[in-house]
Image (cartoon, rainbow, N blue to C red):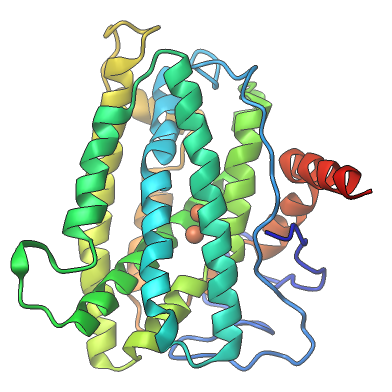
Length: 336
Ligand SMILES: [Fe+2]
Ligand SMILES: [Fe+2]
């Protein structure tokens, strides 16, 4: 990690909800790798961050256990999921022949590894508050180590290169949702109005902003390694058709698990669509439409993730994130 901030001038002009724009300087359009503008200086790199969880309560959106635990599912899924991203990308690195893409992919891997580590600390904090997540995490290990492991599960006769391409397509599909969620949390003013714990909000926004920042990398990596022809496009659709329902199931089962094992609630509250939609109506969770519309967008042949969200807002947040600023300050003091 080098803690370097993304240079200014990386603003892409895509504002929130701006769809159908063309890729800007330094971005790659649909169908292949864009030429970078010489000297654009755009660079994806992990940032040093440091979060102090001591003062964060179990229900970090006060009085909103359902919304809190719906978002807490991120802490369940991301440590294992993002470690798995890095593993698959490491396997695919020898296939990358474009030096700009290689640089972005390495930056992406550094960011995802940092995200995974920081969300693991939140799991430790939940455990310290009496919420044990280990049994749920074991199911995820089965998903990432066995069903999506180095080799196809159940000895299926899939050639190694095709198995790698499928897993890259799965990562690109997941990254569609992380970009949408990242952009959402950056604009979710209702979380502040609800007096959400500032440390948790900073973690979510720092992570969300980096997801918006690197929104195109997994997609470009997939197209570079798997091609942009009909087969590559069909695999992209197939991967999304697998990812969307599996993510929905993981989210619902994860929220139900957290509510069931919440020591403060004592099993008095179950996960319900009614409670979920109540939190959506307050602006504490993204709407079903915001999430659902991300799927047909992704399914378009001409799609490219550089159309997602606002890169300008993400980069602005990253420049002001308290966790990034305090870690940068500590690093500067330590090197004096
Ligand atoms: Fe991430
Ligand atoms: Fe990501």
